Image 1 (cartoon, rainbow, N blue to C red):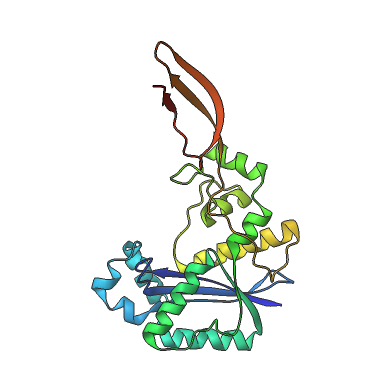
Image 2: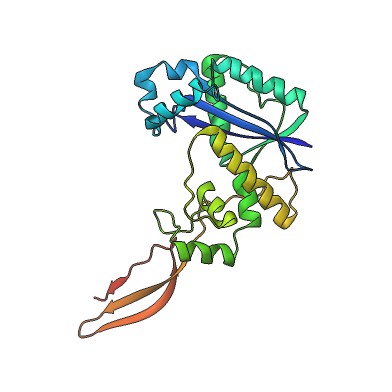
Length: 249
């Protein structure tokens, strides 16, 4: 069975003009990658004011080198979609996967509408790799790994980004995600296969994703009375926004 794992890089999260698309096609039986391609979107690349608004606009020099080395092709967005459609048909791809797939679906819907072209994912379902991760890999061992390496979100919950999950699976705590479409597709393919094989998950299931994976932490609750102050050690969760100090009237 052949599947596609893809990734996009955009100028913005809302008006998500796509400037970089990468994908791999893999065989679920052999785990081999049989196709890998990466594109720069010509219309966005040449719109310098728009491209400069991208969070990873500083990677422009990297893309120039890769295009000169003919490792990345520049094409119009519609031509990229047509190439993806041809590969989906040629290799009989039955489903697609992306990390945080709702965003990547939004990217294709937005850009296909903007550039008036056919969406390559109109004929195959897209599944969120995060759901496979949350179903398979997030256990006490994973949480301990995050605690030991201080891998948390800004709000203090356990991180489940592709970068963090890849660090966990490989044990390479120095790994830094490149945030370029093909490289990210490759690590996300690795994560997907690891998740499916670890718990023998079904390829065609929308597994539940969680907004947060909360941490249980030690907290000190202080109660201030009229004459005395009392402090108690207690356990709480990062998602629970309780007061640390209570003043009695």
